[in-house]
Every structure is written in C-alpha cells, then in structure tokens.
Amino acid sequence: MKEFRRALIFLWHELEKLIFPQCCLICGKLVPTIWCEECKKRLQERAILKIERKEQGECYFEKHLYLFLYRNEIRKLLLDYKFNDKSYLYQIFSEIIIKNEKICGILKKYDIMMPVPIHPKRKRQRGYNQSALMAKEIVKQIEKLEYQEILEKVKDTVPQSSLKKEQRRKNVQKVYKMKKKAKIEQKNVILLDDIYTTGSTVNAIAKILKEHGVNEILVLTIAKD
Image 1 (cartoon, rainbow, N blue to C red):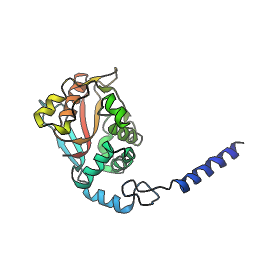
Image 2 (image 1 turned 90 degrees about the horizontal axis):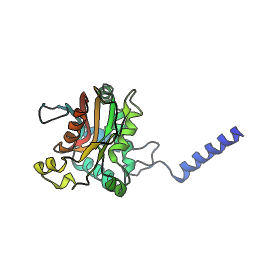
Image 3 (image 1 turned 45 degrees about the vertical axis):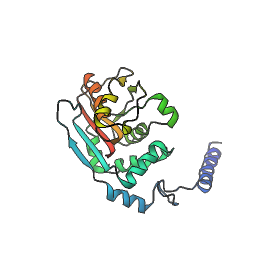
Image 4 (image 1 turned 120 degrees about the horizontal axis):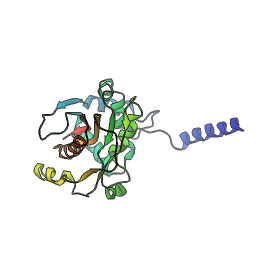
C-alpha cells in the first residue's frame, strides 16, 4: 500500500509538471528553475551589495545592507511584488540572498530575523506581508538563524512613499509595538524590509527593539532609493 501511494504521488508530481510547467518568474520563459539564465545574469549584474554603518544618536540600528538601487527593472519588480499580486517573486529575492556567500556570512553572525510588519487591514487587502515571505524563506537556509514575528503595526498609516522626509518620520511615531514577549535581550537582530528610502520606518522599529534589550541591529533591504 505504501509503495502504491508513493507511486501515485510521483505520478501526480509528474502530471503537475506537464499541466503547470516551471516558468521563469520574471519573463515567463519555460525553464527548469525559478528563473532563466538571461534574467538571472541581468539581475546579478545590477546587484551592488553595499553595507552602510550608521552613526549613533537618532539612529537606532548599526548597519544597513542592501542589494540594489531602487531603479529601472528592480523598481518594477518590487512594485509588482508589493502591489500587483506577484507574491511568488519572494523566491527570486530570497534566492539572491541565499546564494550569495558574502551575505550569508554576514547573516550567520545574527540570532534573529524579523520582518517589518504591515497593518492587518493592509495584509488582508494584499494577501501577504512581502517582507515576511522573504524572511521565512531565508531562515530555512541560514543555520541557527531564528524567525520571529513579535512586532505589530497598530495604526494604518498613510503610505510612506506618498510623504516627504520629515512627514515620514512623524508618520511612523507610535505606530509599532511588541505584540508578545520574546527572549530578545542581548540578541543580534536582522530587520528585513523590501525598500529603504529615508529609514524612518526601520529606525522607529529599531528604537523599540533597543528599548527591549536588543544588542545589535542590521537592517536588510532588497533595494535603496
């Protein structure tokens, strides 16, 4: 019976491949993996991988690591990912991080990865938290890195992208809070988001984390505007 069941499962997976063949998640070309060689090469050429150290004082996180500038194709991909129901693109962004030895070497120095939360109303509308999808995939591949979702957004604010720098800073005040107790004292934390513009959002969250005893915070984003 067990062998018969395995045979059925195998046949079902083969049938799935025929009905739903794997396509490049960017251009749609039929491929054996999640993207074609052309798209993979193009994105790899655009990757810049920069680490910025932040000054103490009003900045509550120590470093910012990003992979791309928020331009051209990267901008379009992130907008599609975030607003146009292309949640599957998390596989592309996660793989870029996971397959980069330098990035993985940096991430291994941290204890916890957590996504920037979105408001429940926004999540219902969108269907997913784009940062959470990536974070969950990345921690599967980084040994001893733990996923935690202990923050929540308690106010449905105006989108940051529609505001100027000073307005953005005010827009995120008293917006986030810890939703449950967690053992984060003296831990090194990675805060994952998709796009970094002024840093107001991640800085507001980093302040809360520091108030709860977090040691060091790395902000990791796909792109910087």
